[in-house]
Image 1 (cartoon, rainbow, N blue to C red):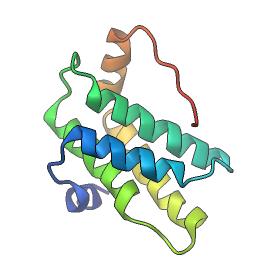
Image 2 (image 1 turned 90 degrees about the vertical axis):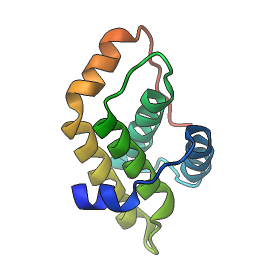
Image 3 (image 1 turned 135 degrees about the vertical axis):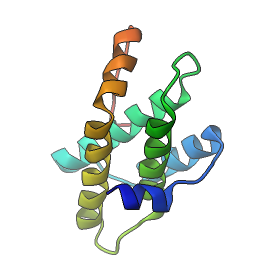
Image 4 (image 1 turned 120 degrees about the vertical axis):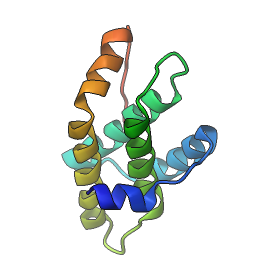
Length: 116
């Protein structure tokens, strides 16, 4: 999984990443539970990346960006099967950086997630 993250990571302005991710997520219908979780996880990682008041560790930042770029750029001919691969990678990143994510939520008062 780390190799895949490194393969997709590149420096990208966060606003550009946000626009690309928003466009990509608009193409994904939240039809199955893991797809809904994929959408929520992607939005959560983006929110953490975009928060100017949170000092995210560099390794986590790189992995978050790599995972989101993988979701944006790697499309499958069989979307639901391809989305499973994206879901597994985002889950891996969440587990790998759970301490950073917990630290973020311990300093953030409100977080409302939605599928749209």
